[in-house]
Length: 250
Image 1 (cartoon, one colour):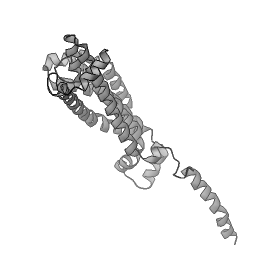
Image 2 (spheres, rainbow, N blue to C red; image 1 turned 90 degrees about the vertical axis):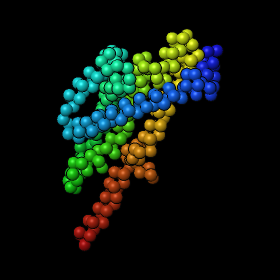
Image 3 (cartoon, rainbow, N blue to C red; image 1 turned 180 degrees about the vertical axis):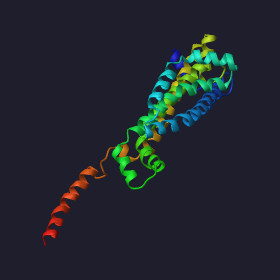
């Protein structure tokens, strides 16, 4: 069975250090993904925070994101390869263009979803705009921000695999090389490694999301005892009211 042969190919140590050098292909994919994510975060994160906090430029950001999503990956990559030559730079540019929209949407949607009353209360106690962004909006927006980051990682890894068609590196090269040489075992093994990489990266980000998101944001507004915080404050207020009234009457 070809699937079993592909699994055996993956667990054959010689294929990771000699011949196709699967370990080198994996590292090349991670390097390409890492550089792309770095530039995506540097561009999309501050822009998304600005749009979500101020509400300015939202229409322009949505319009630009829709255009970026509509750009054909292979067409843009082919154009950049013709203009700049084969290498890492054109691939990273394409990955950045395609990876900005999901992260940008996650960041500004998360910041924008913060309750306006919470922000007004923060201003009322004297917090500056930077303090509101750093201490109020970003912690509350973390679930949507990390969700956008997870979608961005999946988009970048998938596109990086397609980009291997233009350069002889990355896990995608195992697929194209296997297809060119009719070695379908290697081709399927490369596809399995790509899927495994995506699942591992998404699992790591899911764990990070669970660890860094504040408990009250990720699990609702209930306290450890199970009673709502707002309800406990109201009940406490009701228990104090008769005491205050009795004091005023005496």
